[in-house]
Image (cartoon, rainbow, N blue to C red):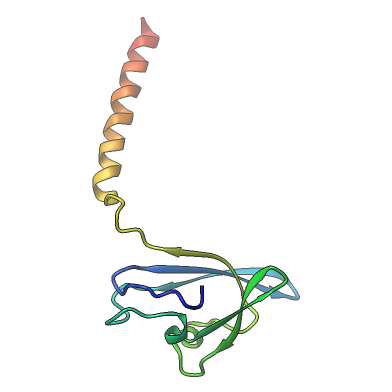
Length: 115
């Protein structure tokens, strides 16, 4: 994962688990699209990863990196890593279409129930 290269037009979500004396704390860090002008990797973001006990943890942070500025700390466990999929259709088109279909079939089920 450390050597993966990311495109600047995709949004990246990093979900981490932080162990505290009060229990686990969960945080979401988002690398917004167009934050970088060219392809980048996690080193440029300011993260160095390590594998400990079959978990991927944040090993080192650059002092002036974006990861440190956004609030990440060493020892954070990466629980999920998501990259935006641009091949999926836009929600603005899919949701209204699905709502219309739901209302259409709901109406016919309601009519059938009355008969």
